[in-house]
Amino acid sequence: MKVQRHGVSIGIERAGQEFFLSLKAQGKLTHQDYLKITPLIDSALAEVKDPKVKVLIDGTELEGWEARAAWDDLKLGVKHGIEFEKIAIYGNKKWQEVAAKIGSWFMSGEVKFFEDEEVAVSWLYE
Image (cartoon, rainbow, N blue to C red; front, side, top):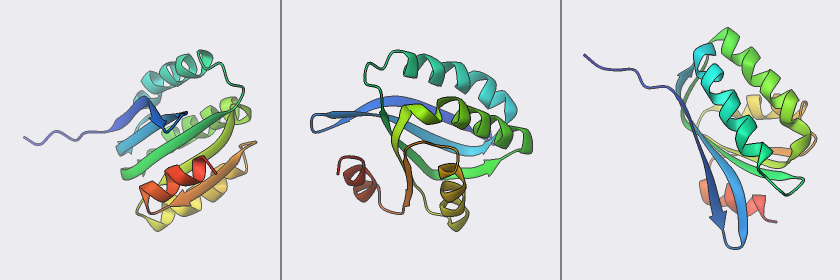
């Protein structure tokens, strides 16, 4: 039996002297995933001392969202959108680039899509 893996890994990474929130999305995200993810992201952002957070999202293994999970993602973005300075979305699918553009409408900071992870991280620290 093959187990279908999905969810989001959350971490804090460092590039040079700068820290950023890293998220890696995998599989097709569900509402149940967001019931677990949202408190973790809320908690991680509550501990950040800087007023603006830089984020790297790795979507290379993301297949998409269930409808209710897409709504959960939008609500999460609206809730924390003002806290983000830059969000670099690293992916490999055309729809991810479109999703990044739509997501930028709900964020106070910049949101950009990249197909190269190193270029995405470099952009976070320009």
